[in-house]
Image (tube, rainbow, N blue to C red):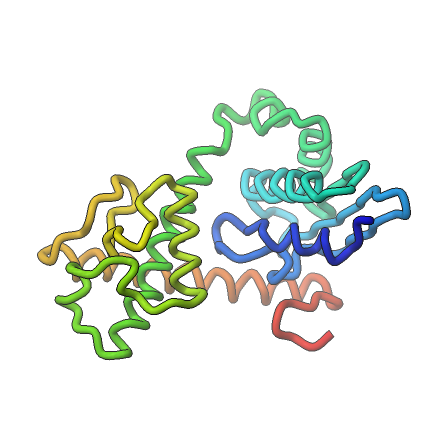
Length: 232
């Protein structure tokens, strides 16, 4: 029988596309109920009324897909509350209409390219995290261009980076270059390494700053918002 823990576990794989963090950790899941028959109702909320509708649509649609895929789930309902486009997004996701059809006359493209753009940023940010971790342990900057992913220390930082590469169809096995181009997948040569890692660092800092802002705005908007790492 499906229970709430299973559903929340599935939702933890759904990420804010810009912040690259689980919607559960960010506090975006306001409620999750599972009936005796296995029907699931999930309510989502965002930091502001005007959060970008394309980001919001991605999260609601991904949450729907994640919940519907849980074994034993019957009817799936995922709704976004308190957003200027809530009705359009909720109706479009429930009908499995896609972004363009849901925002008829307003949207011209589906969101695949947007998703990939943010995955590339997540890959850059993850590269910075892993390389900084290695340099703190004594690896010289010049060495990084010669190393593979298998040379990096095992742990969540490495596996998160591996996962983003896999999603982008880029080399992700242990023999793959440690530092690679997020578009082509080619290894970054030593002469370009410092510039590339500078770009990766800026991406990571910006992502973390945006995460802090979003968390603070969510707490200000919803006084009951409890996020990962906080006491409930």
